[in-house]
Length: 345
Image 1 (tube, rainbow, N blue to C red):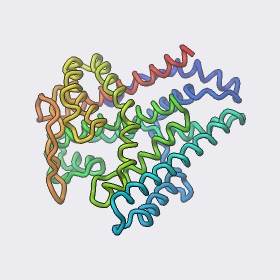
Image 2 (image 1 turned 30 degrees about the vertical axis):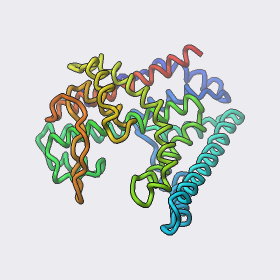
Image 3 (image 1 turned 60 degrees about the vertical axis):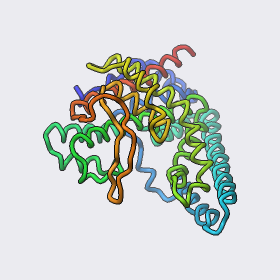
Image 4 (image 1 turned 90 degrees about the horizontal axis):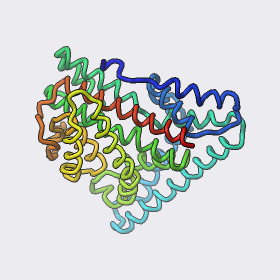
């Protein structure tokens, strides 16, 4: 059932958590990660701290705004802007790495300080909030409530909801599911597995900076050039992993097409304006045998995007249902991979 697609692996978690509870001074990052992934299914990301003034990523946003005003002035040359934007990115990298190092050091040296790392992971990893929002859109379309579906998609896209029919809403919802697998789950998990708190904080910080100044506009074309490419570099390896996991997950989804999913990944990824996100979208489109992408209508203009896939473009609520199943299956495989790494260690 779509409403309950998760297959929690509590037995695996309990086995490892017993070691933590018996030895509270022990620091085991991958076990903490697995625990957070299970908690996240039910609670979603921890967002309450983002309302505090001294929340680190709120301070980062203010720092980026200050750098934009002081270093990205209209009278500076393109090269000057590029250099100053690069310096901004380097400062963010160093500060993020320092914060991650401090958290790691505390977690490894002070009893029960690993709880701070758990909070960090609960803030920066999200595998359920988008799922739940798309699930509500699915329910609305299933009930033929187009107005409710438009209201649900409004906060998730830059398109104008009033100009979207049920097909475009379904396509957009599936695209959001596909891209969020990379940006909200697998990329932060990937860098945490490799480098711990340092890796996940650097990834999230560069993502925040990229959202602020990585846009391809006249003002940010040069100033955000290095940040934009640094963000793409941080997404590259996780996106390759995501593509493989989607293909594998499609083996377990009813009426999915794993072979077509793989072929789409090869054929259509580079046709999307952003390679990393295009890989997830093309693989999802192939698995569900639909076509995604296409023109995006905003309040100001219509942005021409290529069509991704060679299936039907008339996606329906049933395609969203299969997309949700595929999303949840990838999340489960991700958790099982982490549990396998723990067992091997």
